[in-house]
Image 1 (cartoon, rainbow, N blue to C red):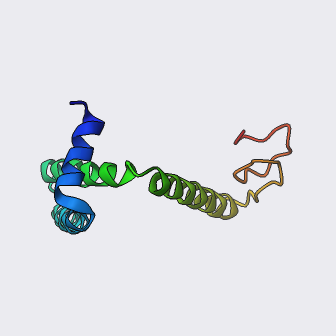
Image 2 (cartoon, helix red, strand yellow):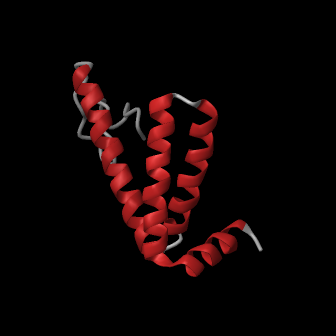
Length: 108
């Protein structure tokens, strides 16, 4: 059984609601590890959180929506950085906002 099949089997066994509660529990454990700055525990809890997130990402519609939102949030953050650096976004097609002409766009 490969990783994807294993994650699917775990998700199917415990169900969506069960895994949502498990994800909340693991996120709380990660927060505690971060608050204590316990490097080893941070690694352990990050692995647990990622395993659960990967299970939810097996749903193609969910994964597509998450990736779209991620891209929007990355664009927004980059634009904020560039504004802070007095480097406003450009209007180049498909640009993430780099303040360059279409030919010189650094984000293409």
